[in-house]
Amino acid sequence: ERTGQRLSFTAILVRAVASTLPRHPYLNASLDGDQIILWEDVHVGVATSVATSIEDYLIVPVIREAQSKDLEQIVAELGDLVERARARRLAPSEMAGSTFTISNLGMFGIESFAAIINPPESAILAAGKIVDTPVGVEGQIALRPTMHLTLSADHRVVDGAAGARFLADLKAVLENPYLLI
Image (cartoon, rainbow, N blue to C red):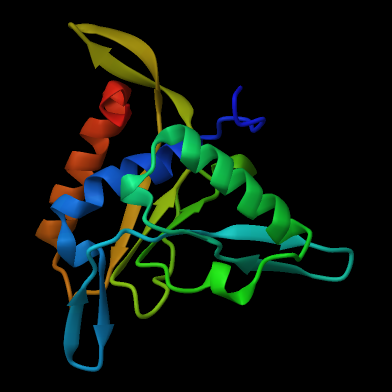
């Protein structure tokens, strides 16, 4: 309410990823030749579709130092970046320098997909649509909102076990949103 922006699940994902990545430095890394660069700051790129009457294309605005921003700041900044991206008013510097990217196709009804890593980053997170899914709860079947998250990682930098630990930590944060405050 204070930002004038709608709280999107993408903003929640950015906050959750930004708070989780510092514990998983090889997922917030870049490959430069044969050297791995571990970044101290988390600069989250958010894949954004921009459609015109002539073409449809993808750009990646960047929320810089996302690990030090609260949810309100991320909502405001993401809303501003996406609005200006769709109006073609982003500076090139606002679309460069991400250390990790999130691609969310849930709003298009896509439940799961594999995103392609943006070099030189070491990983990208694909987020699908939130759907009510039957799950077991205390011996009973109940509907619960679930979402598929798919991590693509450059195995020259990080292996699958490290990726799985990141996803497990991210899942814990998303299932306990008070951790985002």
